[in-house]
Image 1: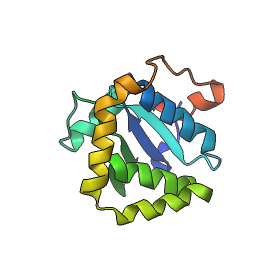
Image 2: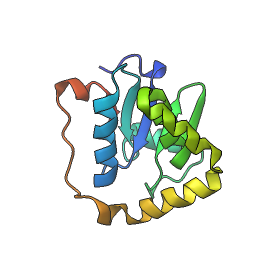
Image 3: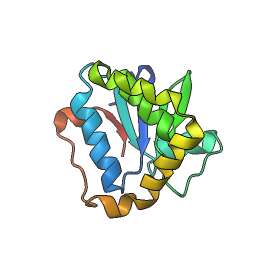
Image 4: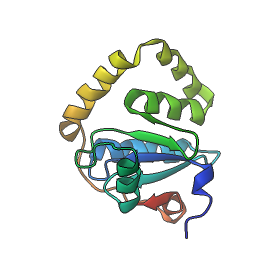
Length: 137
């Protein structure tokens, strides 16, 4: 079963969104140090995460990054933190932290509102190795 996810950074995403699934695949391909796990917001695990924090649990337009026992980030701050954790060239995204969150979240929200128009809504099917990185989909 799933073990040691408590030591990972957990990405909560809209499991029915093509743009979200694209970015999950993108992270999977670059997660060379096995730092991330994934769960859809629609899953029982995702719903528990949302309800425990009093967060919206019916509209899935926000990406969350959670480090159990430490923190969680939302929207643009989650994106920047994911890039930072991936390291390498992606650490340069830290420069994005100089932009106030309310401004970068406006860009995030614009993309989020239009995400269903931006990508094919096909399902992502992880391979056997990638399946180990999903807590619940």
